Length: 138
Ligand SMILES: [Zn+2]
Image (tube, rainbow, N blue to C red):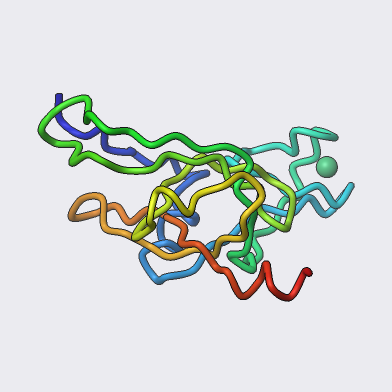
């Protein structure tokens, strides 16, 4: 099975364009202040269409994770870490934690965004542990 390739819709395209520039952006609802992910045409809290893209901090916290030790096909080079990351802006994003000692992983650890090439045309956000943020919090 080949890697699935995102085919961005016009609504999603700004997100992927930003990733290619090394920026994480999120839609903010001008009506109710809700921050959205994944990209939508309407706010999923209030249905408003008044959505504007804003750059995100890239900081988040691991909400859950799993270590995939056997890739689903040769196109998925195991082991790798799939995680749910709660961004500080609010949305929860499924992504990967890269360059990490699996034994160091834990729910609640701080991460920051980085970007990885998924294909010639698609760059995706990935995350790295950011221990300094955890030290600041303590
Ligand atoms: Zn809204």
